Length: 119
Image 1 (cartoon, rainbow, N blue to C red):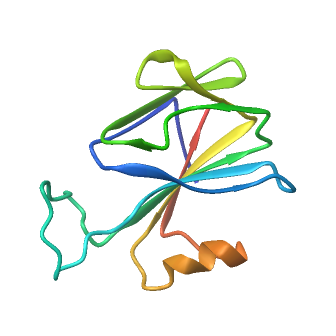
Image 2: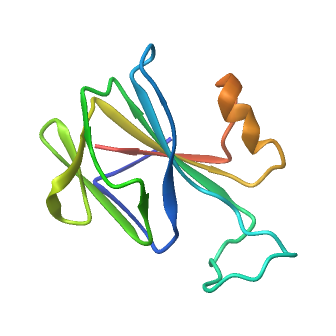
């Protein structure tokens, strides 16, 4: 697992899942499919990226981002340098996945190719 102070991406991310019982929020940037025309092509179109926030206490973000920058300040993860967009959580991991079973996130057993911990 890699550790970073920031995460930045020019991809589209959407709120993908929130579970109250596990206090977990997931934002996802889906991979791009060869049979779909996109306005903007990702550098790594065969990769799904998940942002997994654990021990979430508060959420104040829009439902999607067309670019994303996250940085941790104390107990908040601030989005796009906007103090009003944040998630109050203990952990944030960025998981990159290039396989075909990205729906395994629903069963909470998706194994990522690379994981970055934002601290």
